[in-house]
Every structure is written in structure tokens, then in C-alpha cells.
Image 1 (cartoon, rainbow, N blue to C red):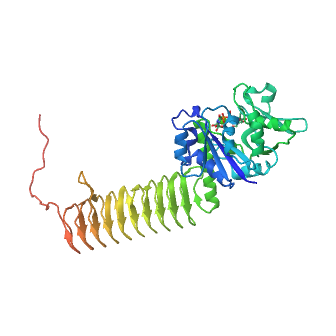
Image 2 (image 1 turned 30 degrees about the horizontal axis):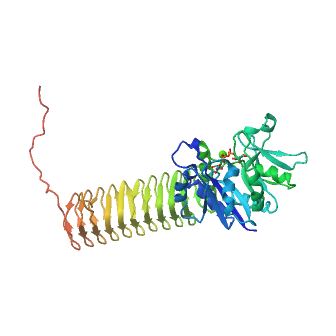
Image 3 (image 1 turned 135 degrees about the vertical axis):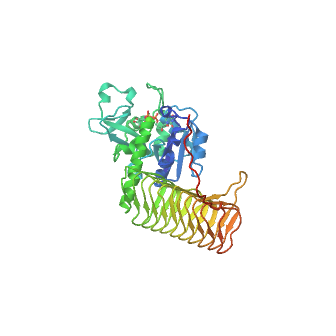
Length: 454
Ligand code: UD1
Ligand code: CA
């Protein structure tokens, strides 16, 4: 039987106190709705319908890369009304799974067993909670058969004592939705069309409702406010951390790791505490990431160590490099094998050749640097004249003494040498020494200043 998924995402999310639609709030760096879409796609549905209302346009733009059928629900008249809006696009012979855009931890395994149970009659995902407050409660008859759901607001004190709740996730043959949904009314305390009301209609028709229990409470945790958002985020990160550990990555503490995107790791990678990975990050075999590093859209080749407190953005780091501590690699930085970038060094649009060293307190921007270069402490490539940026080219084996300023555009040919403290404005030819600093004078017999008398 073909599967179609309907994701409900029309609600405002008032308690988020945000201008951003709730389902776009990020979990692990991506809109929470995107996680639900990814999970839905794992079930190989023939269609995924997303019901949108509040911030519909923004939501559609944020997920423009996915093949989704967008369904508008102008007014949020309840979950039953929301699902009904999607029905015209659903094939009569499909099985339909309803999930929420604000429940991002739900697993494909759980959903798939629910779908399996829903081929002839509705099936509901339930959970048993110590604190069921706020949820719809599951009603069962004397034989234990599920006969309906009563919303918290409509429930009696006795019904509120029931710990078995409706997670909201439900699957049923399309025919059941099409049959029962139009018959659901709104005479309840919220004057809403409740989706779970199709269950009592199905039972009245003699159908047996299946129920599956969620694997964990966290899996069904819905995000209504930022406290729940932070709980979902931590759980998501814990899972990613444990997955890395199982894949053979040494994660110092899975509770102090943040992956906001995709992290690909080779063998024997070590990640110390408080590392943040954003976008696409690839770490080769034996790479070590020190504490408190941030890497966004970075590749690091085998055997390289990124020391503590380093910030790398859109950079490519070669094999066996040493970076940091306290290094800043800005976009367009490419380090060849064995390069060394030390503390308080900033690089941008810079090719650093094999084995070259920029070890201390330097700025290297718009620079093409050969192999085996040594850049002294405090060296600055002056790439900007206040209007335009210019390039500095440094050949193989060049030595630049400390505290030099290299005024671009500038070419230093191979084996060139710059004396410490120089301001270099002219090209240096192969093997030449450039020194451009005031000559030292030593004055004998000079008098030290003495304190004025008042
Ligand atoms: C719903 C269930 C309740 C269950 C709980 C689990 C109903 C009537 N109640 O209650 O039994 O225990 O979920 O969390 O279904 N939405 C729309 N359009 C609407 C209304 C809602 O798209 O008109 C979306 C919301 O954006 C949200 C989801 O549906 O993602 C659930 O809606 P919400 O109002 O939060 O339902 P609950 O009151 O939590
Ligand atoms: Ca809710």
C-alpha cells in the first residue's frame, strides 16, 4: 500500500514569543520542520503534504529544496480541520500518516510500525506519562479496546487521572479519513475540529483501533516554548554524540558537543569538549579537535590537530597541519600539508604552502604563499588601501622577519628574505634580502632625563 504523510505545521506557536514561525526554529542548526520532513522521507512515501497557516510563505521558502505538497489552512480550526484540508490531494487507496511539525525527535522506526498497524483501520501512537497534564487521554472499554480520545480541557477529573495519552501521531487508511473527518464536529470546550474524534467514529463503525507505544517520552516531546526547544536540542545533540561514539570517534563528552549541520569523521578522530560544528564539516583520519573550537563548512585532512579556541570558517586544512591554539581561519583559507598556523593568527583568502609556518600574531589575507615559508611574529599583509584589496605573492622558502608589514600588491620571489621590522612596498627578487627600517644609531654619553623639581 502506498503511504502519504501529512505534517501539521499551521499553528502560530504563541508561547515561543517570536516573529519566526515555530516550525522554523532551529534544532541542530536546521528548522525543526526539516527534521520531521527528513524522518517522513525515510518511510518512502509517495507524497508528503505540509499544512501551513501562520508564516506560510516563510515556511515554504525555508523548505524550498524539498518536494512537498503545500496545503494552506487559512484559519486554525483544529487538527481535524487541518488534516481535512490536505485530503483532496490524497489518493483514496493510500495509507495516511499524520505527524506534527513541532515534534522533531520522532523516529522513523516508531512511525513505520504505526503505519504497518494502520492498513485496515486507524492506529494511534500513545505514551504512558507520569505527568499527562495537557495531553488528550486515551479512553478504553472494559475489554481494553481503544474507544476514543478525550482532550484535557474536556476531560473529567476521573479521565484526567489516566496516564495513557495521545501523542498526536496517527495513521489510517485514506478512506477512513475521507469518511470520518467531514463528520467530526466542533462542539467541545475549544470549538475546534479534533482529529482524534475520527477514532470514536471508526469504533462506532465496528473498527478495532490499534495502538503503538512510543519508544521514549522524548521522542514525542512537542515544542511549545523555548524550554522544550532546548530539551529537544540537547536530546538531539546527545543522540548525535552517541552515534559518533558508536562510529569510533572519541568524543570527550557527548553532552558538550554541538553539531549544527553534518559532521563526517574518519577513523580515530578525537573531539574535545565544547566543539561546535556548523554546516558541512569533514574530519580525516586521526584528526584532533581541541576544546572550544568552532568549525563551519571546513574540511580537515588526515593527521591534523586543531588546538583549543580556534575558529575556522569555510577553510580547507591539509594533512598533518597544526592550527592554533587561538587561530582564526576565515573563508578562503587553504592550508597545504604540514602547514602551521599558530596563536592569534588570522588568515583570509590565503593559500599557505606545504610546511609553511605562520606561528604568532599575524594577519595573512589575499595571499598566495609557497612551501617552506617562515612568517615571523607580528607580520601583516596590508591587503587593503581603504578602497581596494590587493594580492601578496610569496615564493617558496621565503623568510619574513618579525613585525614586518607587506604592502600589497607585492611579490616576494623564492628564497627572498625580509629583515625584521621592515615595511615592504617593492617586489623582492629571488634570494634578495630586503631591509627597510631606520638604521640604528648608538649615542654615547647621553643623559637620562631626571624628574622635574616643583
Ligand atoms: C493535540 C491533540 C492531543 C494530543 C496532543 C499531543 C487534538 C485535538 N489534540 O493537542 O490529543 O495529546 O496534540 O501533543 O488533536 N495544528 C494545525 N492546525 C490547526 C491546529 C493545530 O496545523 O488548526 C498543528 C499545530 O501547529 C501543531 C499540531 O497541529 O503542530 C498540534 O496542535 P496543538 O494545538 O498543539 O494540539 P494540542 O492541543 O497540543
Ligand atoms: Ca501542542
